[in-house]
Image (cartoon, rainbow, N blue to C red; front, side, top):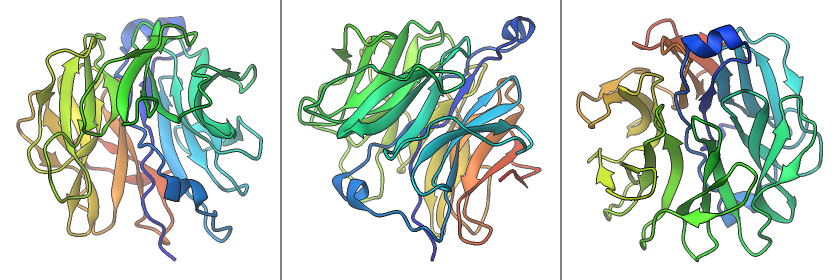
Length: 312
């Protein structure tokens, strides 16, 4: 049975090594689509394993989410797919990891406290702490700012999907967007001055909204796409945005300039592809695809779409 595409977070982090921190900049964060009530109730099909690329580090590591052990947990592996190691281990859903810029922490989503909260843990999976700690609502899509001092996220606490920001320790949770639309998937620009996100502010009958960008304080919200799009991700140099665009066969991975111009299809596949994530040097993009055996697996390709290679 072919599984429906899970809309999860893809983010870059800089390397743990000091020498490579100088060489590579933080590319920002990718959207983690909020989980609907229906998705919360869905039982996992034990006959299928879904694996979603989540993070690439300049240490040649990819953090990802998989249900291979019966429920959604966070794993890490080398960029060639070797040494896949589980970081979380509990009956709850643990998903959408987002590394801190120094690589020492991982923010993630979990429903271990009944509702979905933003947690943080050490790089090895230890010291897991609830940051949002708001039992009255669900919270999604954590994304560290480039300097590691802030985390952008999505919350339903005010009755609608809105983008918030908080300090990295969970304090000073502040709302950035305020409209009747569904805003999701915040992703910082490499310099931390902008946040790109998905919003359905413009009514449409499609499967997703459009991509917008705003200042990091929530001001000057500007629409970038005009044809249905989701899942934006800044390139490390801040000149490009990768995103998902719906085609007849499912979603394809596109790339565009930061002003929304020059949109180009990278994957050109007859199968659903999604969740693009740049490598720290901007030369590669990791993504998920169901092109093999109807299960979602992790792939990597060159930034121009060539050399598409399966990792899991």
